[in-house]
Image 1 (tube, rainbow, N blue to C red):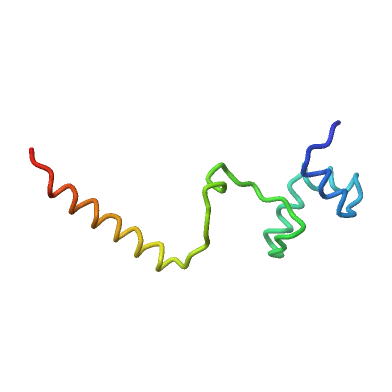
Image 2: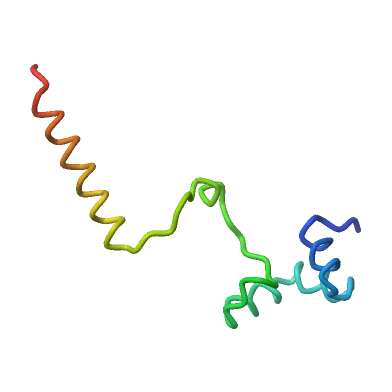
Length: 82
């Protein structure tokens, strides 16, 4: 069975090939990482939206930004004439 890029990276970090293939395929490695919080030696499933993240902000800042954007749209809509 050919190994994907995830397995090759883990093997290059010193993990035994048999352990890597079994742990990645079974999901045991991901589960251990979620439990331990280890973000350096694990595999996390991420969707395409992960590529759209440009910065990490506190929740308050995100909500404030959303409110400001909504207010701007509301004001702009108020200027439209039917």
